[in-house]
Image (cartoon, rainbow over all chains, first blue to last red; front, top):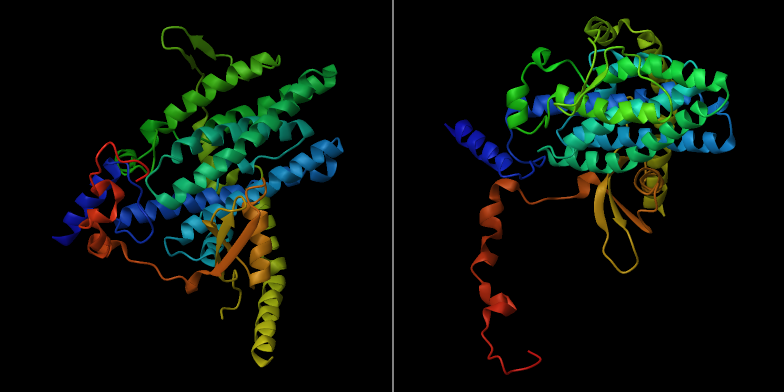
Length: 313
Length: 96
């Protein structure tokens, strides 16, 4: 059968470390999974602009404001790279946005939590972008060319996000007792959501074997989570903050931290739409889309008119 | 044209430094060429990655097909004599 031969060639190519490009033959399950993953990733980038955008007008200094603006602009760019990557598989961006707005497509659970204080902007850059980097550096080695290239570009830019967040936390932690308390409070609220955003534990995550063989997923959720925790806990200690997990202990034998139980019920509730900000985030996105529709139409009408005038001239 | 379009796709080529060729970096959506160049600047050169941008309507690009890759590029595989290393020149001969 033709398909079996094609599948064999496809898997051999991946095993040899070659990238799959948009026009290459690919199994339907591979294509479907990539569309799901990449669009979810793209949606996360642009929904992720909302909690941070919330603080642009209230940033404590011009320096912080300029940095936050640049970071939020980067997130828009990341969304664009990723939507482009999904479009290489023949799915139109209009369709992708429709799926986001009607709730059939998901985005990262983490963006359904509110940003209550300035310290949350520090916590997001440090923890949320930090966790995202762990995931994305793995995905940059994935088999689908356009996704992998988008990841390489994104990872280069995320490092700035991560460091500016840590700098905010460090500045607060070295400030007045009230400022330090703000930083600790932000860490308390963002720690568990950040640990959870790397996805369900391996025993609850189906399909992983095939996705690993096809290099759609490069590492298991738990492996990435462990690396995130190992790197982040000492960073917290360095600035005199502590992660809100009384069971967190360094295990000398394994060289890794062991953590307390994760509240997966909370994670699945947020994914289902019952997080503190789900409705608010979706409404903000849908409103932006609706309110921008006339701009898109007017620009197309203007372009058509210019084209006509050129032809006449 | 659909009621609410996300604008046509333009492929973006960037020249990183003077004297080297433009290289494909990705694409943007835009209503016209001018907007495509501005969007490309905002999306692909936020960290001084380029000094010149080309944009091309994506539907204006034709590409060779991956299935025919072998046969299509075959003619060059059996002509090793196009490469300078094909020719044996004695050690004593200079500047050749």
